[in-house]
Length: 246
Image 1 (cartoon, rainbow, N blue to C red):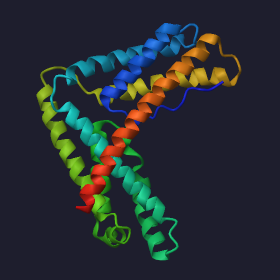
Image 2 (cartoon, rainbow, N blue to C red; image 1 turned 45 degrees about the vertical axis):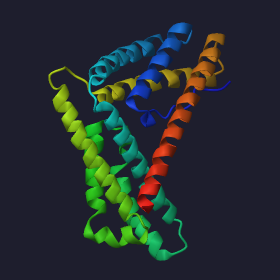
Image 3 (cartoon, rainbow, N blue to C red; image 1 turned 135 degrees about the vertical axis):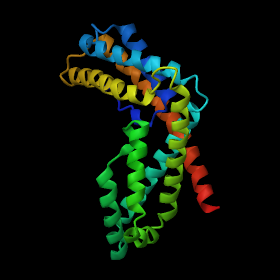
């Protein structure tokens, strides 16, 4: 039997994330937590999702939320492009290029993948990452690997997002808590605990008919959201490539 697929949660925009989690919640209710053997895990998930729902209601009132999500997607794509390009050059037949790739890869590994952090944490991590990449000692490596422009673009995207984020935070200051990204850090582990529990039961060959149907329907939803994300990211990547060539 098929297991629950990886949903790639960090790639979801806030609206997509909330909708996916709501869809998952509805499926759990449909088949019941008891029949899925996740009564305890569902309690934690539902509590975290309730917090995300409240935060979403606050953020929805800000016209800047959509722009923040768009900018976050753009900087995630740019960061990933930089990482992939440096990784590609690590296999270059030219020694100078492999040495430069190794130098830049050390910086990438130092900060890890920032894309699943809160907006503010990711902004801080990327700001430090860009600062290290743009040190004079790394200039020759950036030029040799043709990644200088991308690092500059990442800095611009990150600075712009932080500016808009600060403006929105000031706007929401008197409305109550509206940090959806922080609530996602509670929802995701709770969702993953459910998926891990069900997948473990499947692996042991103890799944029920209800569980089989649940997994099938959930995987269809995961497939839908992955397709939506791929199309969106493809558009952003194409636009960024055209801008870089201009």
